[in-house]
Length: 84
Image (cartoon, rainbow, N blue to C red):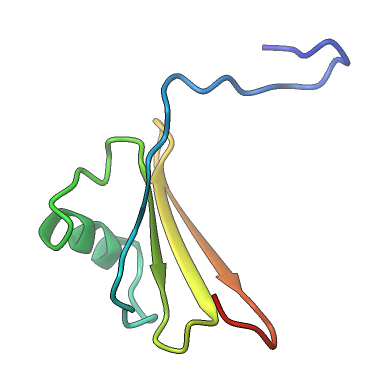
């Protein structure tokens, strides 16, 4: 879909829930391990379109996974000199 200014826009098909893990994870975990954690520990469907957020033990990094309808997206965020 095109916006009034000519740029592309995205229309959400449904509300996206954001689920945040309360325990830190081993930050070496990749996408497959995080999908496993969502399924086994959280009892959720990683491919349902919700956003799952995990923090590192030092609380200075986040990993987020989200299925966008075409594939799984893994995002990593590092904070310098601060904590989440």
